[in-house]
Length: 289
Image 1 (cartoon, one colour):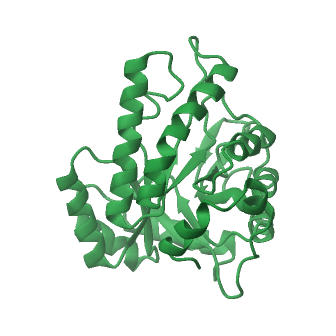
Image 2 (cartoon, one colour):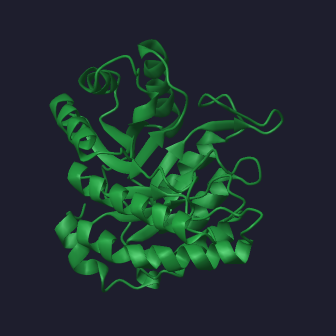
């Protein structure tokens, strides 16, 4: 695996073609890193007790959400360090209320501040990525405008990504944008920069697509993966293995992509027994045992 320093030293020289097709396959012995989202852990517990619980049930890495203050971020960092739980990514929080694609300059400014805060907190934690919902199509924003406006602002964020050594990981969500794997791939490739990669949520596209097809098309662009399941008939997210996802095919597609990064569970929270069961489901469904 590359260190951050080595990654940054080679990042500027990587073309999109080399990035998507020329990197080596996953080294033998590496496997997907099972991770949990901080919001799933019992909120009545202290950070330290939450994080110790995560480690006890088999999660050694975690995705956190952007917090408003550096003091809070420092508390999270300290508790995670004490528990032996690595923070691998930060989920940006400003992109829904204040999308980069908005025609309102004040909304865009707030969105940029949110991403800057997220990138800096990721650096503080030693995380290697920030999740970004890049744009939202709405009454005042067409698909084309969402594409152009968001790309322009993400390009302005790349220097900070380079400074912090943190990937901007673009996720496909229910935002009426990047509705096909082809668009998803093209959107990322147009940056021609290894610090803009894909965050694939295997549950988000089930309503209108097939997860393993997206994984295969995104391929080496995938920095991170979210895990949840979905039932098309009832339009509901459900526990892992209880929906319409073909997990065997998802597992095969991730292997074909050479993916050995973090796969983070993103479900509702619950108690120890519930979370321990989810940990075992991830092991079974992704073949980590």
